[in-house]
Length: 240
Image (cartoon, one colour):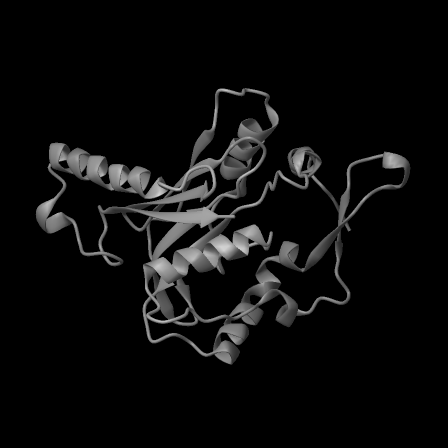
């Protein structure tokens, strides 16, 4: 048993039915894709290094103290590790719709590596969704990631797009993640409120290209999609 930190307890307090103080990501790995059993074994082999992934939150009687982390005696990896397939043709549009459906269902979409610092993204969610500032309808946050390659089941992670759930009156969220010399932007939007978030994504890519030009960082230093340091890409996710 471990007492929850004051910071984590504050995040839990802010969590609500329409305010989700968790993060996720969509990781792009080099192919060929691993089989389910291979991926399961890779995750299982790392679980001993991250005890938090195998714990539950328990509240103290009469709220006499902060909640505690306890080991889940019935932990079942198969409950947490799911697989699904994209419909044909299996491109970016189908992936965006899949992530949007997962978000609308309230499921937690997480990366295998757990590299994105939850503090930075959760703080932005806390500020953007709990403070009654009615003139604010979007929040932007950033998470610095490792500047070296990560691997899952022997496959190198080429890109990782961060995902921040929407909450409260915030209907568009932008998360920025740096990894292995590149920047990626994850843009989440409520389709009923912001059906044209692709305009925002196009603008991000356009202006980032201008910044790279101004810095003299384009040309040979910018590699192609999913493989080059010094690049930047934006991906939008439309939620229900």
